[in-house]
Figure 1: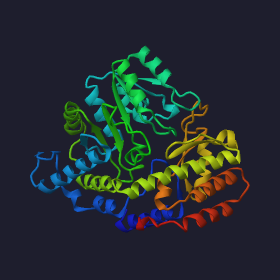
Figure 2: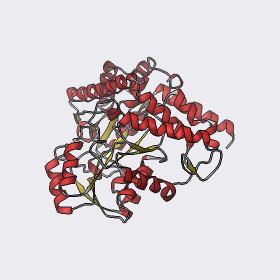
Figure 3: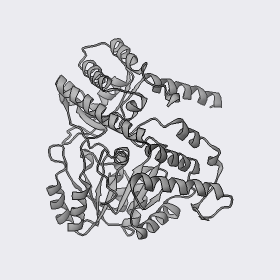
Figure 4: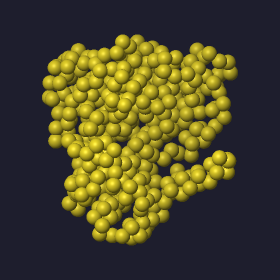
Length: 403
């Protein structure tokens, strides 16, 4: 494939993003400054090790960049220590597990079908091969802290894990930390999905309560694709640093670390707090509109909610995802609590508003989006009518390249 073929495909992807409505809860649009750093000459530099302790020469300036990223992350989240080198959230979790349970052990987490992540014990993930996972479940779609305590007392895990990929409600990290203390185990939070909400004060922070907190930087934080680990424990950060490098990773991606530094700085601005508040508002309005229309939807306290399309429209999540992609609405099939369908089909959709809000989505438009999806899945409007409605919304939004 020639370079011009790649350029043409990038143009097509740009067109797709500009003309479509992005509702995948784990996606967002990074700023120009973040994208510039991602494509900078910093990608040329090898810098194995940590600032001041590299295995290569010529690291004077990347050391300063990485120190700035660490400082910005700690300031943003109120943490004492940070590792900004993980290439992804999955690698951040792997390193955190190793730092907390270096010889393996038992981890208690939310059952995957109720909203856990692959690295939280999926049989196809490294996590289930290296650790013994046991699970707690939701009750009526919500965390049941008494049930979590009961399971924790029964299973006696070495680590209690919180933070989820498809949980639409607030999480009481203080209560979970009390449960961990009661059963004498460590407590870890994977806040990949809600990191932006935590940074903006729209969700309780896990930092004062958890031994270790992991995150991605590209979801609600609106930064580059990558991972992050935070802790207030000086002994643990030493173990975390060793687990990231040299145990799991080699050279860090200093161009991405520079972009992370910019992302954290952007999230410290008051405008980011306003943005996240609008994300929460838009998500609530869309979920509420589905309920008003008679669809079966979860509630929401954050940036996402779950729509039961099997009960609402008589189709699977996979079928709904594919049908909506035909009109320019991108979202993902998702398991819902007590789902009777397989993971490659599902009964539900996960819908999030972090990306669309970045482009300028309003509360009125969030309600309109629910109406388009509802009427199209019920076959009450044609494909052409639905596409026209989508275009009428996205034509008013910012272009991807101007963000």
